[in-house]
Image 1 (cartoon, rainbow, N blue to C red):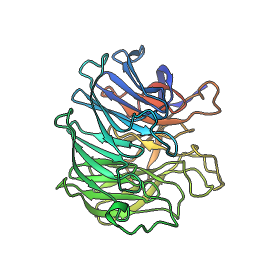
Image 2: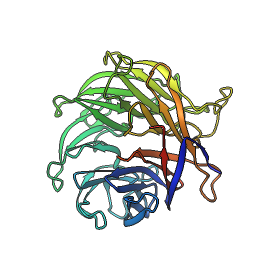
Image 3: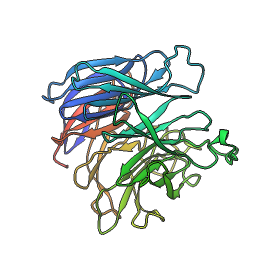
Image 4: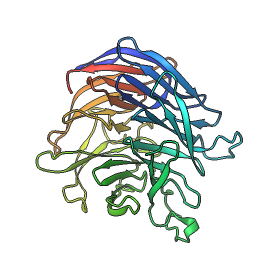
Length: 377
């Protein structure tokens, strides 16, 4: 049986595994991990009885495992699966931009195209998309801002990269003995972008002038810790008089066999000098520091949260709700660890979000979405 504390599952959606869930009003959007499933749109007005409204499929070799909506516009990523190869079907990487004013009948408005593998992850505020595309002439994914004031004609506003990524610009490449740089995704708060850069750590960018993002600070916990930086989530208000940022390392792509990944809390009161002040772990998972299989530890926090409790998707450890009211001593207040999907050895909770009713949506990368209620938010 599922392991639940202060949580209760009220519904389960049987669907292919996914990378992201997002709720807009009473409509749930699911981004799937693998073709042919691209995006599923679900009516959750009655959360105990979810109803599939529409499905969008993809050609072989591609996925659109990320999805965001705002102002009746839906964005999905198009990214080539695997390590490369030719785009034999001509599909191409980028962003699919849809009109979802009627969620039951999503209409493709246009596709924004980019070179290489495509777009990995992004955020969208209804006007601007903050994305991590591969771009002609650059090594790895970079930061880019797109203006979608007219969704039919997205326009690049600005871009940023770590010096050395712009190969076509003649920049000296300094990482021949290290992992190639790769932007995972940016998150915006005010006139700052908080950017995860995989095994190259995290960066804070000033985007007061969005045409020219400027470096404010950068920190990298590798190679001291072997896990890649996945998410940089700033709090919109102070906790104990300090500005803080939750940083999740993902428990994959380890530089060497290691204990499970975890999350950090950084003090960014002086944003030029981010300082880690605490860490977040699931009790009992790391007993003695011995290496454990990938996807045992942390994946990511929800971009949306209520009060000072942050939901986390913690791979095999399911949903974890963490109270960070005291950023120096965060603690778990609730959990929901689902049963493994049929044919799987354990759960693999990949993403989590909440809606305006305080309901939680937890997707497994192998199969299925759980709708969960809690008294902990």
